[in-house]
Image (tube, each protein chain N blue to C red):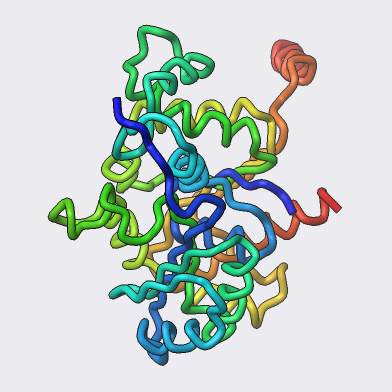
Length: 149
Length: 153
């Protein structure tokens, strides 16, 4: 089982397919769950504390907005943990749900710097593209299984 | 500052999305209750949310996925169901994260078709994806220098 970082980190499609073919998807929910289940001071809604932007300094400079550093405190450890990654490049909703274009750019940069196998795709817009999309992910994940075995 | 005492510690919550011509969230919930054995199940408009220990949830998911494997999709969730920080009953408007799901559910029929088709195909027959890019470990400096030197000659 390989730990596969997914981008967008909240993607239903990627999360399902990575798990479906026997690997572990690394998405934002894992980090949120860890914070939500850890006792401490009440800091709703995501239990992000002032410590998190400090942890984000590992990935972004101090003059970078605290929002970027806070997000990197969530996503940075996942990128470090990842053994492979699948990236969808035209994920326009990530501006809403994941929130921050600068963080998204930094996340993609850090993934590419990790020297791990990366599959980059765009969302399918037809049934034919759906077959190609699923086929590319299936082939990539199967290849990871053979490498790790 | 107020003390925070978490609930449902040690559990996992997963979304189960169903986009099937044959199965509704209600039939999915009924089947899930039959094998729940302590897993908390919440029926929603798009499917279910299931909460329990990781082993229990995995067992339940494996069971209900078999009902229609190409039309049932699973995803992790950070919050337990009904959490006042996320539940729209408390906040008003759509739940944060809803728009991402709404966008992807609009494309999920293509994924279902892809799952169906690739199951009947050999790996070498998969069509090429639009703009795919597979990157392995990056170009090392020595190889780059060799390429530059080759260009200059």
